[in-house]
Image (cartoon, rainbow, N blue to C red; front, side):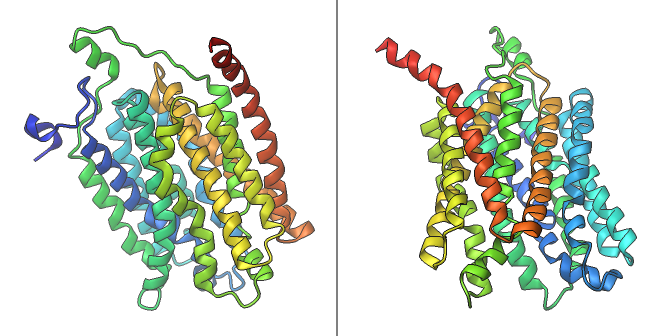
Length: 407
C-alpha cells in the first residue's frame, strides 16, 4: 500500500498544511542512512582495494578518496534544477538508482581505470543528500524542516560511525572490493521504499487549498549560509585524514579499537545531543553558529597538546560539541533560506559549497601534513574556525543589542 492511500487516522503526525507525516520523514532518513553505507564505509578501505587493481602501493588512494566528492559537487546544481522542474521525488529516486549502478560497476571493475570511472559516476549520479533535502524542503517549512534536516545529518553521522565497522567485520569473508556489489542492494532497497512515498506538496499549494495566504518569504540570506557552510565543513573535515596517524603518534601502543572510538566521538555527540540542541538554539541560530565555531577551534587546538588518552578524549568531545552546535544551527539557517526559493536549486548549490569545503580541507590537510607533520592540519583548522567564529559573532551582536534595549 502506498503512502498516498493510507487512512487518515494512520497519519496523526502529518502537517495540517499538507506536509509529510513524521513517520514519512523518518522513512526518508532511514533510506538515506542505508544508501550511505557503501559511500561512507568503503573509502577507508581503498588501501586494501587498490593493490589488486594494479596499484600495489595504493598511491592513488588519497586522490580516489575525494573523486566522488568532487563530482558530487559538480553535479549537485544540475540535479537540483532538474528536481525543481521535473519533481523532487523523481530526482531522489534517480539519485538512489545512480548510486546502485555505480556500486555495481565499482564492484565489478577489474582495473584501476574502470574503478575510477565507477567512483566518478558515484559522485555525479549520486547526490542523495541534496536530493533528500530538496524533497523535504518542498513539503516542510520552518522548525519542521530544520528538525528534518537535523535528522538527515544524524543519519549521515550514524552511517559514518557504523559503516566502517560493518565493512571491517565482513572483510574476512567478502573482499572490500566485492562488497560494493553487496552494498548496491541498499540504495536499490531505498529506491523501492521511497517510491511508496508521495510527491511532496509545495507549501504554497497546501496553503491555497486550505484557503490561507502562503507565507514563504526567506528569512536568511544565501551568502552567509554558504560562507558558514564552507567554513564549517572545512574546519571539521581537515583533521580527519590524518587523525589516526596523529593519535598513534601521540598515544604509543594505542589499539585500532581505541582510535576508532576517538574518531567516532564527535559524531556520537551529535547523535545524542542534536535534538535538544535544536530546541535550545532554534530561535538563535547565529549564536549557536558562533559557539559552534568556537568549540571547534578549542577542540582542534587541543589536539596539538593531547599527549594522553583522557586529554585526547576531552578534545574530541569539545569538537563534538562544536560539531553538534554548528550542524544543527546550519540546518536552521538552511530552513530559513529555503522559504520561497526553489528547494532543489538551493540545496544543490549548498551541496556544491559543502563538498567544496571538504575538497579544500583535504587538499590543505595533505599539504600541511607533508610540510609540517600530522599536527599541522588541526592548526590550520583552528585558524579557520576562529575566523568564522568572529564573523558569526558580528552577525549575532546586533540582535543581542536589540534584545537588551527592549528590556
